[in-house]
Amino acid sequence: MEEEQTPLVGDIAEEAPAAENAESAGESAGKKHGGFTGKIGFVLAAAGSAVGLGNLWRFPYLAAQYGGGMFLLCYIVLAVTFGFCLLVLEIAIGRKTGKGVIGAFTALNKKFKWFGFLLLVVPVIIVPYYCVIGGWVIKYMWAFLVGDTASFSAQTLSEGFFSSFTGGTWEPIVFFLIFAVATVFVVVFGVQKGIERVSKVLMPMLAILAVFLAVYACCQPGALEGLRKLFVPDFSDFTYETLLAALGQLFYSMSLAMGIMITYGSYMKKEASIQSSARQISICDTLFAIFAAMIVIPSIFAVTGGGAAAEDAMGESGPSLMFVVLPQMFNGMFGGRVIGCIFFVLVLFAALTSSISLVEAIVAVLRENLHMKRWVACLCVFGVILVLGILSSLGFGPLSFIHIKDKTILDIFDYAANSILMPIAAIITCVIAGFFADTESLVDEIGIKRKGYRMYYKIMIRYIAPVCMAAILISGFLSPL
Image (cartoon, rainbow, N blue to C red; front, side, top):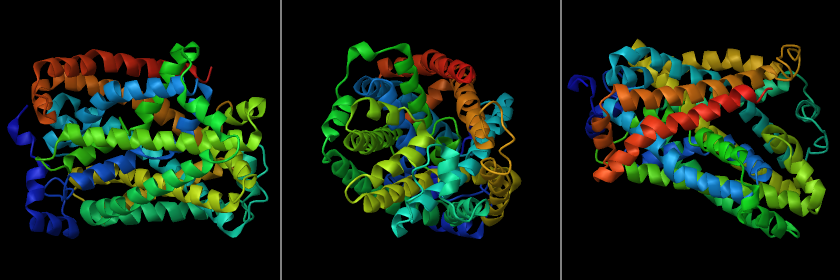
């Protein structure tokens, strides 16, 4: 690896006045860009990216479907092994090269510049429909706030969505635009004044709301059965499907293979410990997922009384669980209107911190490679969000005739990004880092000193992680069948 290709952003960030001036003036990221002010800012921003809709609607659903306590045990074991290794790898690539995804892989090996473009496609596909879902969250939060929850008795996602929108087709687009504008507005202010500042406010609020809602849900009559299902593992429930579901959830939840951790890593100070930071991010992400499950599963058991009714409710997939089942559950609980409003505020904050990181991953590349000012890059990204987001939103209405089997436009984008492109990107990242880059230099960047740990890390990245990712990819191909 050529030394001149690996500037350290941490060193640049120490020149605080120059870096901040460069950021505010909108100079290209290839010349200068401000970094996080310290470890806390980085950890909160990265944890905010990891803590998102995947924790709130996907983790509880999978935990309920795949054995509860057994799924949770598999998830934790995978988090401290497989997930941790991939997380530190992406952060190390970002900090070592000091570049966005295209420049980072070019610096690792010039032959793999093309892969940076492929990786960039992932956030480009995800962020528009993520903003659409963020708009749904805003609508539901508002509905609980004003008491307009009578229409939440619908039995399907599209019925539940449109029957609750008295304005018809255009109201979902309005809420989508509100969420998208809020996301881009934060990113325009840069790393320190935008992303870091917002993360330092929203992440503590997320923690407080999550703990409050979990305690409230667990105190409901009948909730104990739900807690037992979540925390008591039954080893007879263990199957390869449980392991694969936990692996896929971990991969999606930790914002891996989206270019986010590479981008955030490029803003990380040199003196900050990658291992310690990644450990804190993993703990925060895992705890939030557990609290989400403690909110959802006990609530369902409390309202349904357990048994077959609870199993049917938990059998709903993530979006239906979030926007159909849970609103009905909250309507049946004491103080449900207030709790529902607080819950969707929690979801909104989690979605916003994740969407901000997705947009920043794209903006960083535009600034670095096309030498755009930050506000111009943000405007370009907003244009892409606008076009693809409106398509995703209308896929539940006027464009519902566009589908593949039972997948709407939004479902198609989600499937392409999460089930196909992200596993492929993770496999290629591991192969490049393990065989075609200076692996020893990356391990040094991570800060691994002991010989045994260094060998473990190399084996995980070169062999175990690619095999696990291949299993997720195969599962993604087979799932529609």
